[in-house]
Length: 310
Ligand code: KIV
Image (cartoon, rainbow, N blue to C red):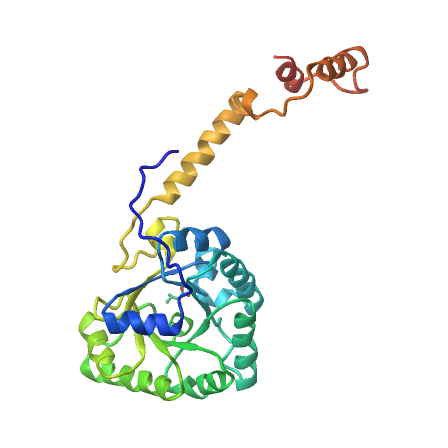
């Protein structure tokens, strides 16, 4: 179980804010951004020096086992968000507005985005450009910090013809840039680009004042997002995006640990003496004598008796 000591950068000593992220951009420091859906992941990511956490609606697939991101509700997202915010003391936390939590009306968008903020998030993310800029304006007018999401937008993947790379022509990247400008005009502070060729992301980033983050969008952005299950190797499914580098094999490690535990239980190797609560030996002898002299009615004697007296 022991791991080699890692030379980790210290977690940010101070809370990461929009101003911090802007200063990173000004200094050419790339922000490190991962998804998190629970308390331990938030704690470990922050200890490792991660700057930003996305409580993504990818939770539908990574945690809830759904076939796409549409299967998670606002209420479920808030459970994940609260857990992450309990663990994240300094990281900038973004809550991902799930499908139909912001598309229907300005009022619902503001209420749901506000619920992420009261859960402890610093900002919310929503998918789409010009066509949702009115909603973005409603949220930013309510004092909510909003990140847009352009390119491959998984909530509308059916409309896009599946999980496909976007922005592959100049005309397409110009349309995405117009969308980003619409988000900027509506008061968004940042945009996330998903599944874009590197040159397309660079084109867009050079034409906006927004902070520009990327997932599968190449190096010319202000920070890199990954889905933590993809880099940790515990995504259960057949999606293997080209842009992912795997840093651990948690699937194998978890399966191995469960198998070893199961073997130990079945072979009687667990629990061992060091896992037992000690009591005063006189009391123990008294209880054992009572078990023998007055056996429990119907008790047929079993492995537990052998074990206890072993
Ligand atoms: O929910 C999520 O993790 C996301 C990423 C796929 C960008 O929105």
